[in-house]
Image (cartoon, rainbow, N blue to C red; front, side, top):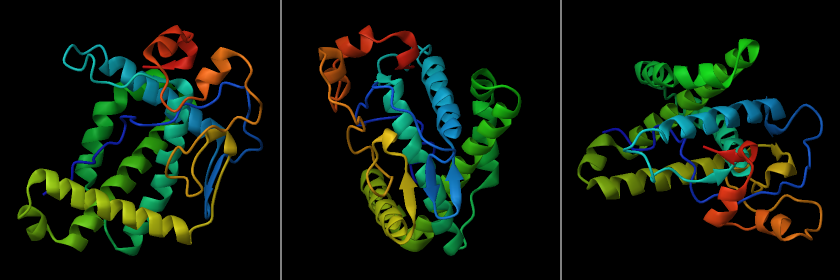
Length: 235
């Protein structure tokens, strides 16, 4: 039985961040023990995510099902993906669990056109590495959790209950790994201390205009998102 969380590319329930112009400082935006990601890594993955949503939105069957979000939202959610990548890889390694490489390759092949659209040259190579590592870590930790719970046990449950059991086990494993790890994330992304959730507004300035205040809302209105310039929208 395969868990349902296979490619966490869809963004849901994230907090809208500030467009205050705050910039990352230094070359390291995210650090999880000895694993580091730069601000450019986050931006490359964000470009991919937004292109992924844009292309998916052209499918009539997907129309209205994809979330509308700002680029700032997408960037912060991508930061949580990268933190999860590092933590999931450690959990899976400790459990001696491996990802199904055929499944990783199949997913990467399906995403290749979007990767090609999103980046060129060395940036494309780096983006491919980031996405491949993300998928590999995600599938590996799923394998570890299924082995921990037992496939026979999961098969006795209904699909909804099995998914909940898997999700709860995943959250517990990630929380424990985060507690034991040295995690440092640039405040510009507005993440929780463990880096696994978008926690709030990272702006260091006081908002005065209505637009600035709207950017700080946890759930922006459709009107607000629709009025954003194209370069500040995702999808």
